[in-house]
Length: 401
View (tube, one colour):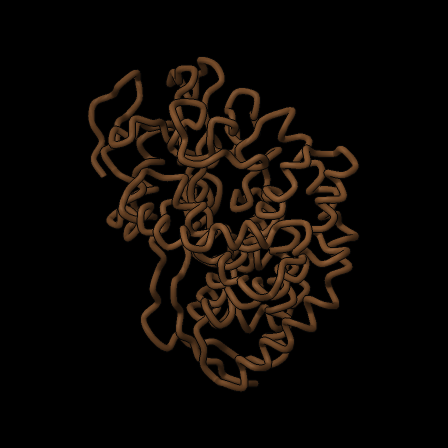
């Protein structure tokens, strides 16, 4: 990354956060952005960037000034012909956001998620027992993807056949937040054949009675949201309970394989679960970036941001900001990661975070009862995605004990 002379009192970077070169050296690139200033101009895309925890947190918690309705990605969905409609949860401002988010929050209440514990625990035990019997497995396909497809798919009520559509669909959604580069076009091509099938799965007649998906339609019947929003919210709920979780679960296996002492400590203190999983998400943040759009002229750290300008919030960088976290590159179960931004913050905080935590808790409780340690058994491979940081493949072996 190179820093040029100031423009509008701000440093200018020629880094491209959507490039393979940036992804391969992301944490060094993040450090350069943080060191450059509270906001930086990304010349390649003509947008602003915030990479420090202080500014990222402030932006996410000021939804009146920093809008989501113009799109959580690079494109301003209000201008020109957008290739996709905005999300009515993630990319909505009040009052639409309040209605759609309100229904999802009601459905995913604490008691509703708690009621899933027994089922999630049983399914975790079945999966983990099978993986341990094999001795070695891919921590992504066999574990991090397989479990959410089963338990979240069941909870939302979509048919078992065709759930694999969620993988390319989620990849497409998060790639769409970046530029129309080769990664974007590859994701579109991969997802195009399954979009119609996925939409059909989210229709009322395909959902299991009493499921979260069915309850969304009941909410629409009661006038809580518009009828046409119901299938969109079912898809949003599937995404909320899936993508962050898949990448977080893979990162957790990586963390414990690379830090075996921490796994031993966790097995001895399973009550530390919440701190452990939040530390995983801070250390390897699944969703790296989200965009906001200024609703008015505003100053950040003395830098003037004009109305309607885009600003990308680097969640992964904020979660490794040394001004917020001591030795942030280290995975540390003694750390209190409270305040991390892996689930976002403010009114758009991840609606599925309780589901994600429950999934991880049940899985690693099942591992803790059986496994003495994890060993990496091949070269980890990372996903190419415009917004996500996650493993594409992680071969591991388990030592039983």
